[in-house]
Length: 157
Image (tube, rainbow, N blue to C red; front, side, top):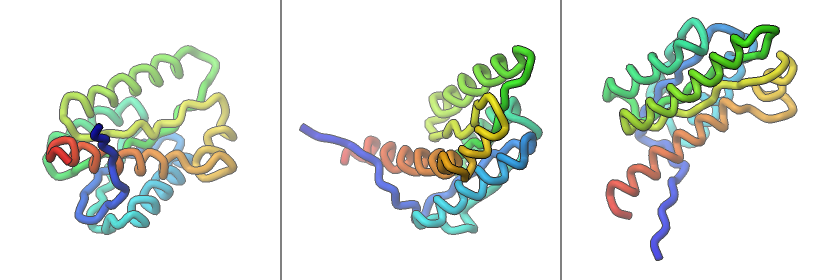
């Protein structure tokens, strides 16, 4: 039996970090966690490119452009959607999740779903470096692992 797994060695890899400006009190913390994670795993700061977009809805288009550019091995997507009193949250969260899945499938470049979908701002802050950890770091780690896994699958071992 053969088994394939991705490593967490980021040396020599380039990443785009697409981050929403909306809810920046949260997304700034997600971004800091993602950058810290990638650098700790061997990615050079010079190999990270931050792409800022207005809101979560714009993340997939920028992520796809980054993936198609050929400049990046992975795309870390970061945003924060906080439920309000209208169905807007439901439409956005569903659309963004589906579109980000399509980015990876259509380009072959891993794109993470580091977009928080929470009921309250406090819940979002808890997941952006508070008591629930930093989901930005988790999104970065997932992309790093997927890049290395896809390399191994393509190379046969």
